[in-house]
View 1 (cartoon, one colour):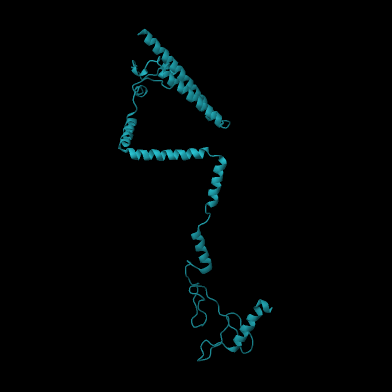
View 2: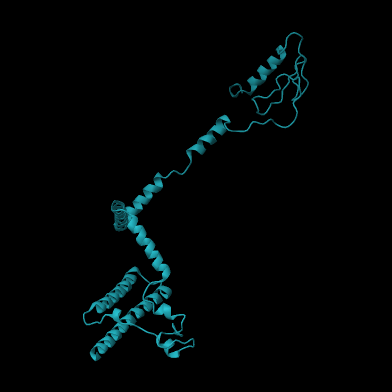
Length: 269
């Protein structure tokens, strides 16, 4: 009995020492992440992770050692519970547990997960039991395929990834063909434009003063005086038409229009 107690005490002291090493390594790594992140390099981060992994493996080997007694067979019983502050306990736990009361004992001495965690584990176990072997095998294959594609992309050189990104940017369309066709149709043929008349009344009885196109803007009639050979201004009086000849243009007006159009032609200048 005495030897077992000595062996248990030595195992606990060794375990405490190993855990203290892990704690110091974590403190050092967290300090670097918070204060030296600008100078921290990825190889240094990997070295810290490798150190922590090695220390955890050492603890696992220590627990699996034949000389280490089984801690599962040991029972911890709280002998004294008090709501008052315990300075020795606070110093031993680095101010993390200043009071050993009825409120915190179930959390610190718990040997099973929380009830909420146990309920979630039961739900996951029930869902896993409902899935058939074929469905589970398909899901495993899909997950393995996704992991393989991800590893392949991570292992590819950076140049290949940059080339793929450039190709995707070049092939990506920078405009909408439907919007372009609608804009061309509206500008060239007036497609999709709303029909509206210009403001202002149109004087009735003036032949030739209707709209040029349905719903489009109208043009002011230009009258040209005949007889005396003088040209009237814009908006002047129109010579009355002869009875029985509606829409017939006098010969003097035709001559003046021909001379005016001929003088404005670029080849007759």
